[in-house]
Image 1: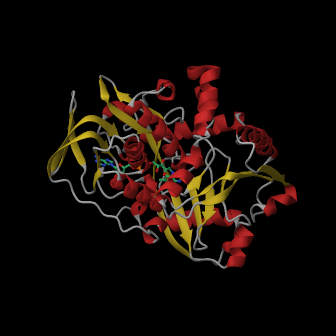
Image 2: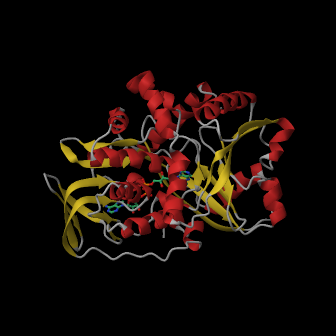
Image 3: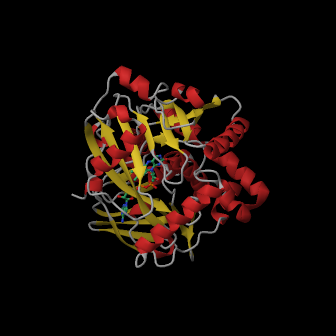
Length: 432
Ligand SMILES: Cc1cc2nc3c(=O)[nH]c(=O)nc-3n(C[C@H](O)[C@H](O)[C@H](O)COP(=O)(O)OP(=O)(O)OC[C@H]3O[C@@H](n4cnc5c(N)ncnc54)[C@H](O)[C@@H]3O)c2cc1C
């Protein structure tokens, strides 16, 4: 087994014993969705809530096999990276609308959990962490932005010795607390959403990899043992697309992120690490991100800095980063470590739209490492587009996404160059 696919915290603590059959034979549907992660299931659920329930979801392995079952469970504010990057395409008004859309975030997840009674350990409390004065200045600006966007939510910048009220580490000089964000058990959230989708009448198939697609007025999607004919189709394979649809595959490149999970810790230790029992990320271009879990474990995540590199010893790699932040965890046992690919576009903005020449074939991808909340936001907008069309769907799809030249043949060079560019950009936008 690929070490990135090692058992995750989510797999060993899943609460829903939800399994779906393999597709066998020919069926018809209004919409066929390829990919059983947050993107596929959320778009389908949004469509079902709009009355389009004759939906088939095809998942190659099992629901949550991709990033959705591997992530840090971090629910951050917003849609992802600095939205200013797309301002030149959407203008001032468009940017304002994107800010409005990006604020839907945690609210959609909370509504889902409430509406469908999903047991997913949702917890409020998030902090963005700064190492130096430059980052503190950035966080001060974010504080104003977050407060303006959501005046009823507690948002507060802590600096100097006060940082310990938010996080138990000496390495940070500032911490921006955002009580609107937080963390969630992402696999249980996904499975709860899938159960809700199934309850609406949609059909879900696992172990049903799509092998081939014929486009046309009706799309025919082939798996090893069956076929789905549908009026509309959605590609929701993200970092796992693996060249299946070249026109969208070309617009992204994968990098990698890694996670560890500690043994359960004492209440005292958890209070010391995280007085808010929250989730955290520093704001460097290549971040450390971590959170506590309902069982008092620490999930600590990282990504590689400059090279397209997968460490041989995932536990050791992440542990050394964790000890830089929390040296007092040196005797703590690491129970699990895993990782996975992140699908990134050149401007780090999520990509939605239709495959060129095929207006009934939609796609969504490229959350650039930040997909738990954004997938819920973006797929709401995408479902509007797929169902009846909407101005905000047109706005989001209008952002152009460049092909990434040489993404396979020059992969290592591309990734290194891309990250170096990102690091440099990080300096100019106050993240370094
Ligand atoms: C280690 C790691 C940590 C992360 N941490 C965070 C975090 O803390 N916060 C955050 O916001 N984001 C995080 N992310 C990113 C986030 O998890 C993803 O952006 C998000 O889950 C993507 O969801 P998705 O449904 O688009 O893709 P995925 O969940 O990857 O789902 C795609 C699915 O498509 C299926 N598929 C592929 N090909 C086929 C085929 N031919 N036929 C049928 N099915 C197919 C795959 O099996 C897979 O299940 C992290 C990602 C990783 C890897």
